[in-house]
Length: 126
Length: 182
Image (cartoon, rainbow over all chains, first blue to last red; front, side, top):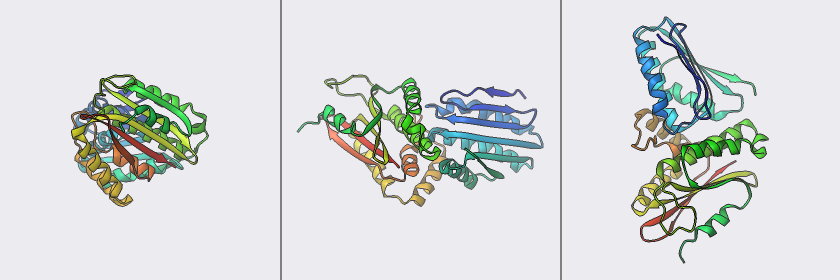
């Protein structure tokens, strides 16, 4: 599968969806006005990846902050990953947050409460 | 007495103003405004927790404006553009205050009022439950909003939303919103 790499912009995160290595990365900030436009291709990619997912998929989410419109799209990404996990493949989410960033920590907890895949909360020092 | 936007404006400019904008709320303006507040020394010296909260809530307030402003009245004594809005970020004592102002059609008032009153009436726990509920239903409005903006602002700030509707004329209402971050 083709790897998607998108450099970060003032409103969108750095993204790497690597089907060869089974690595999904989203880093930076996600605050586009039209988040569907940004995330739709990524969600479609995951849908296709799900048909022949690797035995292990590592998901690294290291967001600085995100807007509410992105929050729904990020949930859609996790939902696609959950389908892969339910089929028996290993999927693990590493959710990074800065040590005093309670909002990002809580956001990780929110997703954990909705999505049934293993989440690892990783605190980063400032 | 009729609503005077300049008087309103003057009042909102109290405190140490970090950003003050009125005019057309566009995606480019939002990027630019965020760039401006990121350079603010006041914010640079803040703890991560507060700084990111301010950025996050500021973006949410601006995008709320972007998605929801209505046309201003034609006789308005300020810049007149279809997507006219005002945003001010200031430091007021130990608080950061974000004030927004925009015109809305009279028939939308009750929807906005009900929404804010509902959000203001909830406990922290209820806010989180409702947030998760709306996020999971996955619907977007035709303007691209997710219906989570106000909830997110209250959740992140832990403060109630302060709002006021000023009658400008028979069809135009000015919606003023203050958000405090501590």
